[in-house]
Image 1: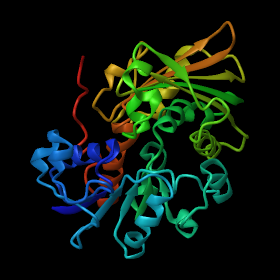
Image 2 (image 1 turned 90 degrees about the vertical axis):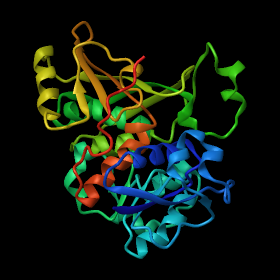
Image 3 (image 1 turned 30 degrees about the horizontal axis):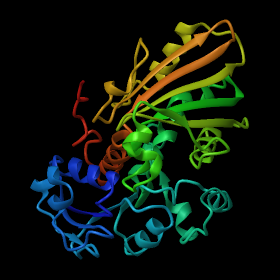
Image 4 (image 1 turned 180 degrees about the vertical axis):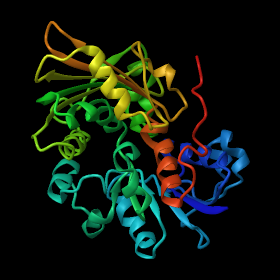
Length: 338
């Protein structure tokens, strides 16, 4: 059994990693930290995790062999560096190692990068694009939840040079994506029966999507991304648009997507628009590509669970690859419905 530790288990991402680790046959959660809950048993914070039998500590114990960090950006890189530098493999849930250009990171996240020297050795943790690199990595940057849907929706079209340079990504997310910190906008009276746009002048996930789509092509892709907060707990539904360069039959587009993802265990090309409930609690991404002939536009509807494939499930998937386990181990559960 591989002994793993979770830094900041008391957030939604950290607790979801703990839930998935518990069901994994090859790993064991032996240590966890929580910045404001040190000294408490985990089940006092999350009763559903009672069987993990973990006490929250200020620091991870010395017998860990793999680390997941669910700290916020900047704090995560600072804390993870001691483990990475000592040779312990790690997956970072934060944004600290996703963006390869340090200036871009510091501009969008409005802070100095605490460990820029580690950025180049980090692999971007999207197995559908970087599986072989992830297998050889000691440090993996988990993708953001919005970029996971946006990149996977448009990667086949971009790599095959089907679309013009501007891609529009319109995403609706559940409130759990904002974490557990109490804010006025996340109160029941504010959120219930409501839908609102935010990050309208630029969201931090936009440069991440742009970076990864541009890595697929010599063309300069531009991304216009707008997220929306909706009255639900989990899930991201994306509607992703790009103008086609040439006329193309919709069936050819669908076959291209099926071919591109034919060996991907968690990508499902579906024949009807997916809903967030279709992926709830699972590591699956549902994609529905189609062509609007009236405007010569490629549209791809995407659905995923922001806390699983958008966070903790992807972290386990990356860990499996890094450790040589079967890729779907511990995360192949079917979605919960309704």
